[in-house]
Length: 170
Length: 68
Image (cartoon, rainbow over all chains, first blue to last red; front, top):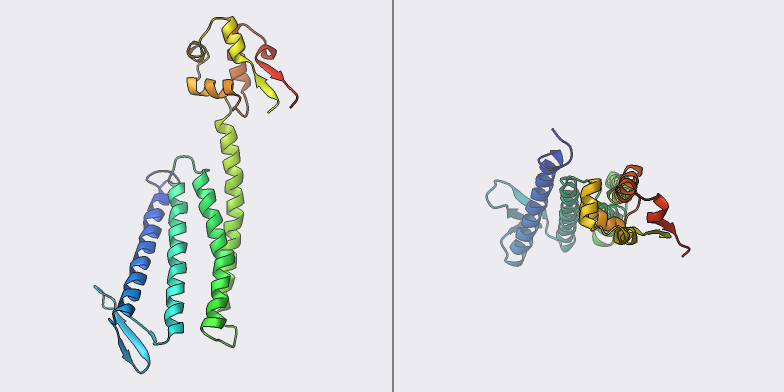
């Protein structure tokens, strides 16, 4: 199977990641709608919300901090999968060194190296009021992912320059 | 860039149109237009060879260096 170009593995991943981002967006929208319209039950300080068309449910402490955390993490997830889908969309093209991939890789780097860690500390301390430093692997993974993305941005930037020069060689 | 393409002058001297030259040297009109406008980043020796052959000229007749 081809890796790049139309009808390739990139095309397959584009549809997968775009679907995940749409599902997450629908999930977030439903959750916010359910909270606003009181479509949930509260028992022993925990909320219980059924997910339509599935046997699953969302449970959590009925506190603004928990709800805000879930919402923020979902927004981060939507952005992450949306950007990943955009990257694979750019890789679907015949010429993979294009402006689209450089732009989306830059945004992915910002998301992982800046927004992700800021969100992590925001959730950890001001929102959840945690005293100990936990789940550090999430932060490490974000930074590793961000660094890979940063290097890939520069590789594709260089590739785009070479491609442009090649296209303008008569 | 300091390299100037004087293809228009040479074409006018030979009473040739861009379309005719493009056909003679086997490149597209669009690419020839890029070359004439100075937007090209590089020129292949094979293209230069074909242009010189078609126009019966020297590379220096087509390309010139001008200080910026």
